[in-house]
Image 1 (tube, rainbow, N blue to C red):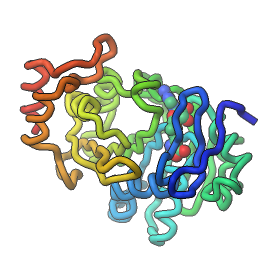
Image 2 (cartoon, rainbow, N blue to C red):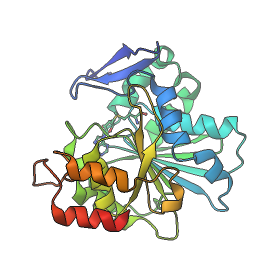
Image 3 (cartoon, protein in one colour):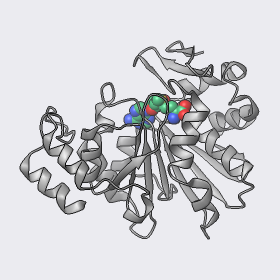
Length: 276
Ligand SMILES: C[S@@+](CC[C@H](N)C(=O)[O-])C[C@H]1O[C@@H](n2cnc3c(N)ncnc32)[C@H](O)[C@@H]1O
């Protein structure tokens, strides 16, 4: 049993994992299912978009962790009796959090009904869960983006949930998001949902080529972020007022591999203006 994790009871009374190495609770305040449903399932309108999709709808679940986001997707589709065929591709560099969660499935609650599927996923990298064909790719997602594996289809939705930029910076840089954006299929409109509401992360996503908008509230955050390849996927795109705040911010610069945060440069501000 991996020892780098503990169980914590968050403010809502739900139980979540905490990484002792990163000092981060996976789903703080509202807990795993409430956060996963609000932020990722509703934020990317998975049930509606999958239902309208004539081919298999493809989801990349980046940072499988303890599989709360994956389970929320599987349950939302099955509760809505959505007949769509969905391929869920989960990525994580380690199976340790899922193995730990499986050992505590009853305390976590949400994982207990999916124990069998998770055992199969961990053993073979693939499992069927309702209408969902679930795959697990044990790899560093940054390396996958540089050299994608054959057989992994391009996504319609990305649930982006690595540890925070403070402890996992290389998953949030302009260079990484630019490579990810370039990989996406122009003919397949795609959303990317994440918990950040930081100006710098939104600037980074926009300079990487995404359209960026406000996501719904979750836990202590009054808003989160939805990025998309196509602007019409956004309910609340960021506009001129936000850009004014970027220009005034002392930390409006994008997260680049080699530079420290600070105010946005005039070149970056001009590039942002062209995308609003
Ligand atoms: C906050 S947890 C994710 C919680 C998870 N989405 C859930 O629903 O339980 C972050 C996860 O991202 C994974 N991760 C961090 N950096 C990664 C990388 N470069 N490639 C793949 N996975 C990564 C970590 O191993 C960890 O399991």
